Image (cartoon, rainbow, N blue to C red; front, side, top):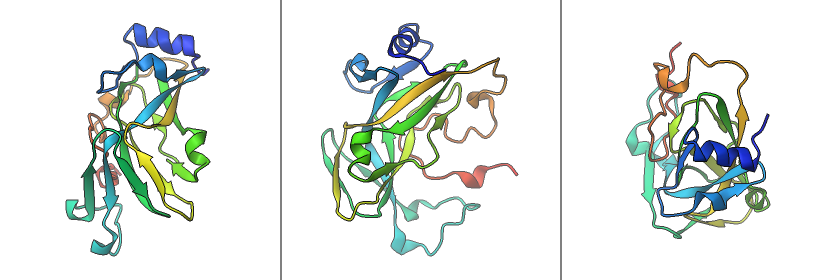
Length: 191
């Protein structure tokens, strides 16, 4: 069952669901009928294509293969055709034990042919901190994006039953506590 706006407010007011915007901003303005909007943060990462021949998913991605760019509030970033970036949310979130969050892109962005996350939009119970999401421009022309724009929307769903193995208890909770967008940590997977 997806939470309504009134239920999202109840969770926020009870501090079970915690969302900090890292800005002096009223989070209530980001609540929609069945979702909560999140904004583009200041930091993003791009892969330096000229410095690597292949990305090996079992090898840690070296920092020289990734460029981190920091912007200011309302700065413009131009996403060129077929460019891929990792971008973190302005908001920090802590999902309670009885919820999961699902991220979808706002249709306003999709109508510009920007794809936000193809598969990585699921947030486990008790995940905490910023969310890193992927963005790709599949348009034939560059698209200007702005720091602090509302881009993502999160819907929250109740979990049936008790969760024993929350995200914070897993040995390989490799993205817990992230602030900046994080590149893949697949090399940390336990096989």
